[in-house]
Length: 155
Image (tube, rainbow, N blue to C red; front, side, top):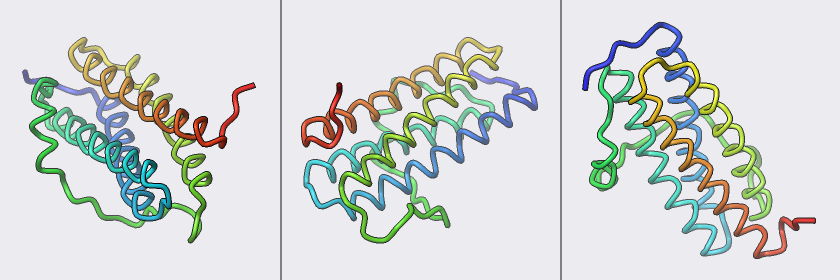
């Protein structure tokens, strides 16, 4: 399905593209820095899903609504991402990594919420809503990991 984006819609998608690139970089670097195997696995799994998100955003920017049913197949050939966005610090603890990732997911999910409301096309809204729900699942996985390790105590 072909779509025509307004200038505002294009600008919002470009912002989300940059957010996805940062998420991919963080998850990739933190997967290598994490000490705990379970945290490494969470980072690697979330990185792959973030690559799907980037692909979906790129498709939208090219004027096409992605087929959400094909997302699983696209995960087999992830894009290589490089850039200058470095996570802060050198040797972070697993707790520091989790806090940064949780803060990032909260922010990204919130920006998707705003973006969704700015789109006129229902199909695009559905794609963005799907991505936002996955971002929330990433945050939930990090929260659950932290809670299980005593890093985030709910009061």
